Length: 581
Image 1: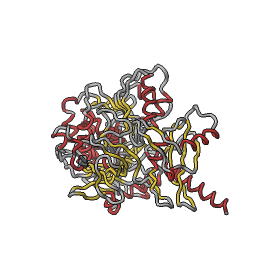
Image 2: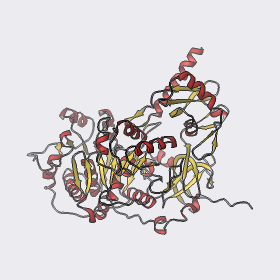
Image 3: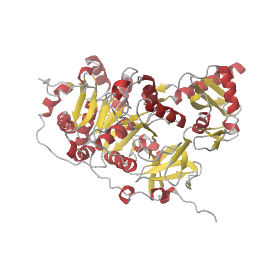
């Protein structure tokens, strides 16, 4: 008897979920007011922990209300876009909540941006208000000459851990304002107009990582934020008590850093530990604050392993979530062993998502671990898997592109109608987005990534090579710590595969190791699930380069700088072509 195929659109994978989780109600209000309601029973609890500054939920709500009055006095109105260029600090969170109360939109610029980049975005968003770390009057005046900024609020580096909002009264009108003056400015606004806002109102403009291209500006509504939080909470079944803390290290300019890590933690009633700066010397300091959940990345995990001293107790850490880049099973096992040596039994989770889905498409927290997967698609969302060529829906167990529908899906790319239309499509009268993740969805809802729709090349024989699949197989080889595969231009075959490999510390003879790698490329291997895998002949790299570490870009959320490696391979191919001539 032939088994009948089931399709993800039937939602068979949610068969064991509660009805209220499968069909959640998403309130159509703004984030600020939901936070007020959700925190009613724990207003005295610490909400934000930033260096030596601890701020209770009540204080956060009060400061956000006061900031909003000051912003209104400065002329901010519904729909205005406030640009903020701050590290992960308390003032940034309070400023977002204040803008949200007014119906204004916040965009977080990367604080490492150049002045030219800041000028570009300030003009792009027509921001009347800019909030940043104080860089002096000359810097601010230069910004004003080339933008239409009306006011600039400066945060002095010495004030990052202070809340002296009534300590410096402005005696006259100035366009440069200190956070120390906001309390006095707010007092000019009388009355307490109350508005629930709307879920459809825009709340944030954050950015894609731009791994292989220019970052896109993603417009996120209140409904998107709240839906993402509800979907994740229903999927992970997180239990929070008076002591639950989360550590946030990814910059606020990315949805994973601000929405997934920070806003969702606040909605759940956690204490959010912020890391304004990260270096080899302060990693142990942040872990000493005893976070239970770490919203990290492969790069932060590596910093953790290198810089936590022997004997430091990490027993309070329960979950480490890797966002941005994927941790291979070998890396997960090594990390679990490291934490075990520091008295911690830690669940290492691979998260997956896009800026377009507010940082999360799947969840691996609080569910049974399944090796090789990025967890389950979020409960309450509607996934399908399609053939990237025919666009037809595929059954469970078939490899294709994961596409997601739900109220957490972004509204649009800012001022980019064509890009927005390309990212979305309709299927059975429902709107989906292309996640760009190739893989397999099983009947339990677990998703295994096999590649990215955007990370492939087609060679002269018209074979399509998915580079993540190549990387995943090569990572199984003994002696390979990590690797990245990129297309390399080829005069005869259009493209071939070049692989950059970081050997483990046990590898000492590099020449022999390359010979060993070439031999392994032609052999079958067994992955973590016990399945036999092998590179296809047209997937085998024609070029191998051993490097000490994979390059990462701070501007791209500390992700591996694939664009740099791709450019390096192109330059190498060009040089080889010149030598042939």
